[in-house]
Image 1: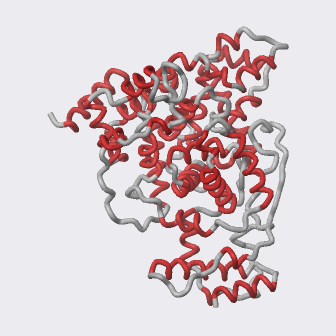
Image 2 (image 1 turned 180 degrees about the vertical axis):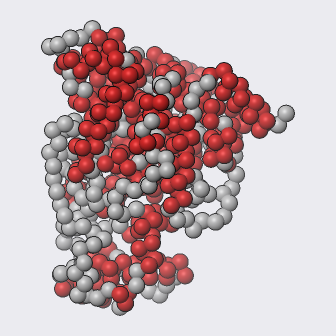
Image 3 (image 1 turned 90 degrees about the horizontal axis):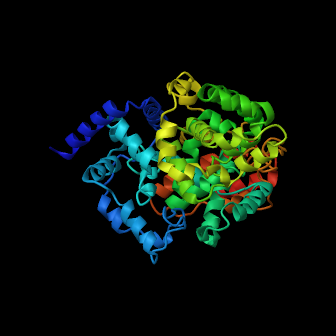
Length: 508
């Protein structure tokens, strides 16, 4: 029997024995595919086959600060006997599991579609092998891109590295120093600079969202795993553009209404999962206090170790971000039910202290595989399948006005002759608006300053966008043509004559 036949046979046995629903996993995969088909890619080559053994053999355990030994609970130490035992246990347990990951790494869409039950078992119940996690996450973000970041994203990342808003940059710098203070990777100046660039460029790109502190929990984890700022930027864009409401909970104008919508949906779901717990909690605490903190930090604020953050992202990448966070939130409340039910009116501060800090994970950590597997995957899928907003199937993938596909189309379709210096259109690529907000519900994780992309520095615009001459090759020539067109588009919305003269000098 071939490896593929063995996988199909095991999939059939899982489907029969567990009868777990796979519609959410498959629906999320469909949404990823639909989103990625919208974003253009110029990569037509076939990606090379990935050698599974090479990934395990070449893994540097001493550099992994985001994986904890399940025996001692500390980051992996290759000089420790228990950590060496953990490493040995973490290797693929069977030839069948090896066959699955080998198939996934070379055909992720086909693998999940064909083997949804086994996919859920390995991704969610067992957790992605930490040695494979960076490669697997990359595959999930680059479905249909042959393992290459799309050109649209590369151009945006390159061309938006300028004119940062000073208030935004200052806030990012402050948050960078306090989000992962114990991880040496984030103490390296070069890594901090690259992560800072990712966040500043995204603030320039997504003018409606800008920047908020909660993004750092997600972006920092992605960057740690990928060690690649461009892939991290692409992943952030993909997450925010593929789930509309996730983007909206971080957007000033839509934050309050969207969070209230989520709260209403979540409490309705909780009342069906465990009405006794729901009634008890509703009687004396404001669940928004901890739920909003959880959601605005991607469930990653105040966790006892970084391995949990890895598992949270594993789960949400497969189940979807909104559904994933709803399930994890419900799971945390259910495992803490004995504690919560023992507290009554007048003890709400005890509830908040317990659920806002890492002790909320205490009972879940006793069997983390059971938490992410049996508990979360046994929730009635009808709670989610009835809500199209959660699954985002057959719905337009649109969040803000600027998307990867819209930007690359704009870059390519601009006609120099169609724009004059007297054009007074308000559709500027770079917004000049700055706003600040104080969010009473979310002060614990959401920065007091929420700013869209805006240029407030004194640097000359031309200093950031010098066009090299002569052209080194046709690729540089094409990119320079794109930049000239973009500059002319920007000129149409400027009223600074000196700045206009500088731009004319650059493109002349």
